[in-house]
Image (cartoon, rainbow, N blue to C red; front, top):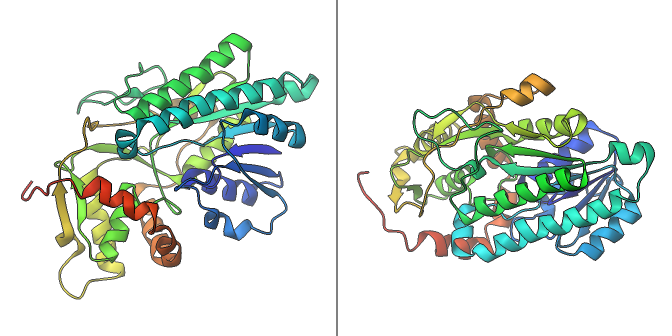
Length: 358
């Protein structure tokens, strides 16, 4: 049995679905079900006895301790996090509460449980912390990609809170001998992605005839990683990663945001063409995000060298699967495009001036 936090979110739910498709091992899925946590993501396994869902907050150490004692997991996979840079700019306190304090509470509960184990159970226990490449800061156009030894230089409240959580995890290994593993991934994309992020937002807005907002000049570069590949990497690190180590997980796909949007528009033009014109006609440039990092890139050679993992999807194959998923799952999209999501769009984009001709 493994214990997964944040397993109703985007990456977490993909991981849980992937895990149960690949393994007979039970998953205890612990999620607070905030705006981005969605049990509809897990509808296909609602009757699977191997999936045990518990709603709760990772700051609730007493509940975590109770669950560890009850289910006796052999590993913790920690996805639970506030993860959107724009939201962190508007409300940084929530990111400190979840990403820093929550990770501390989870570490404390997991360490206390680990200390009750002995023999092979204690030796084989693992705590895998899922983090981000954003902790490394921003790269120049000619800089080498981030490696596992790149100094931390977070530039947003989100990335700073994730950097703090990474440091806590590292300290628990070096201070207590706690068997940790950390992965730092690049930008994920795929099905079940909450539509505040670039790719699902563009697909959704394009289909609804709305503006496709591009921050600044759209030349911010990200390394894009298909979520299915990320899940495979996490399974491999959990299986064979060296205790105390960090593994960067990337897709080897550096793309400017504007190039990604153009690709999405071109795919939609072919699959579901407009009556006239192209979806590119809906592109609108808006005021850039404060402190927007210019470039991220991941050097994923360590995980390939040590664990034999590399992405199976190219950007072209992964983005085609992603667009098709959203076209095939319009009901899921409609269900999440309500309430808090609509309020968020109004808050984040309404105050940004359009910039024509950028």
